[in-house]
Image (cartoon, rainbow, N blue to C red):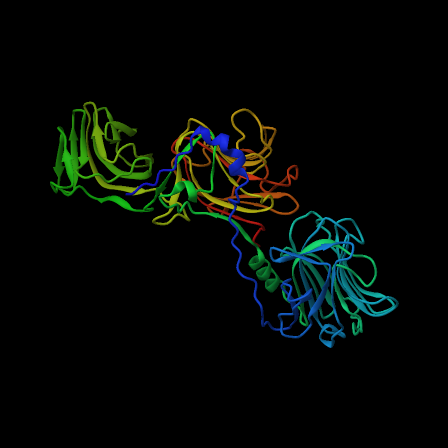
Length: 556
């Protein structure tokens, strides 16, 4: 199998200033639509300018807006909180009388002011969304009939003037009202007064009718004349989550120009897996081209017998790949005497077991391309039903390329995601050192020495899983499992989520990690560090890492 070797020497540290400024974080952005057809949609702004400050309504209803002093950057609009706004003229499609409706805005801000408002001064009907006008960082949904408020809903659980993107949905459905943020119901009111909202007011974005403008960024505004359901809102939120980084290690032979990683203290190579392949499967048939028998080994129908001397039975062709992990299974019967049974690759033994009648199964690392079975001492026994299968991960498929650590140490990739979802596949190849995935980190190399601020997942040499906060290199364990929670030389698919209120949740192979017998909680909340510059791997020799995926939100 062809190997692509990717070696990062220590001299790469001297290039860190240059590498760290490279735009190695790969954004996956689809082109914004120029038209959209959806039931009930009466206004849709994708925040693209057309001509001089014209904001097209791509719903086809004709509710085009006019921008004032807005800046367009990377598929969003910037509002300065002083003079910036969008204004759309009054239209009957935006006056809901006593009917159902839904307001949706995707917004990022650290300020207070109006997100959206259809209102004029004085005692006239109106509806609005604001940020921080009722309480710091809280989002509020209001309807007003000219005399009293029919809906007054304010977010309860979180504050949202935090500089992160948030999807806001405000819904009036019959005599009920709902306020959702990031796919989660934040507040509701049952049995509201249903106000008639017919008004001649313009629609304003990032301000109200007066001076309460909002400094913010907005990437989408959608208004419906129907009430979206919770399932529809969750589905739309999930679709809105942006993929920030996807690393498949699919490098060409020109690694220098294609790599995204910044060298640290470790060395790594890129290998390709043929996941799940049964390299040996079945019985010992006695075929001369299948096995080479050493002394003390004889064929016995579909099994082999061993009798009384240190000796090896080998495959006649190379079947293993050095550094890969294989699940070795075999049945041992008719055991007598004393001695051991083990497995070898070339001249180095990769596993030894105390003999006895049993069905043996263990994951071992190949130290050579050759595979053999050895017996020792004065024992006799029979072997049958042998299977040697490459160890798999739930998400690793044939042809997957991955990092294989050849010298313990660090390597980094740029990532600015501090709230969202991190996924990757990890195999810990040895018990000598801890294996750390610093998924939120302020510097590209927290080694050598104790430095760096952020959060890491650790697979320890005692086979525990930990979530750790690093403060200037110091470790504060937020969550730890019992010992022997995971196995050495076995792939796991790890998912870590962090909500905007700082709640971390850790999953292995899609299952919530259990901390019974350990300490801490899962989920666990910590908001000490709210930004990131890098993801840093600190792997041990034989560790394998693949399938890195980072998104800027937690899928519901």
